[in-house]
Length: 126
Length: 112
Image (cartoon, rainbow over all chains, first blue to last red; front, side):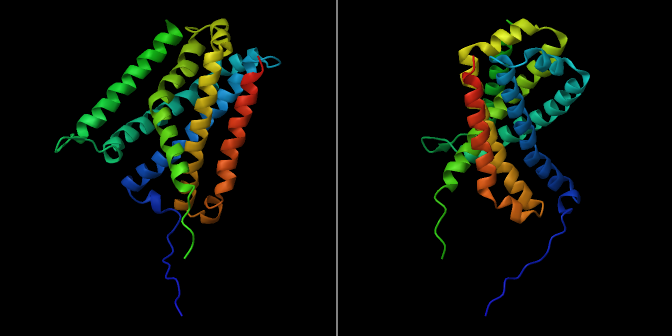
């Protein structure tokens, strides 16, 4: 007979220490990703035939939406920063016998992020 | 011994794809809808014509797909970590929602 040994963990475990809290916030940035997917679907519906574009635009222009977007921006940047910081762990590249420095891989991703950001702004605003 | 879960690599790949796409694009997209549109740098007409562009619509459907599968995977493991093991284990619920959302985006995008 074997019994599973389980040590119950209080649900508030992630509130106890700053690194645990940061981990949970990082995981919960996925809710911002979900929210924005919903906004994209709304935008597709509103701009298509039979959709109400003025109500979509009114919402985007509302103070509530600007506050929502400021919160989303902070969390989205947190996701971007933590994601880029993890890229060297996932992407281990070798040149001959030398491992490419983790900082170089993260740096290349950071440069890519800035380039993509600039490109989108140029496409949309230019 | 239980069978190894052969679908796990697929969902991990979608999680990573969505994580990368959102890491690269989400901040600037938030700037567009949260700053450029409310300030009028992008006018209502400009936003409408941007959203009615077929290329934009295809890209947005692809992003909805990646974003939703990223959320589904990451959020269900976060729920397990938060002590909601039973809910987080319902894989079909989360991936099904992601699939349904993608289908909705695809069908919506076709209405032009």
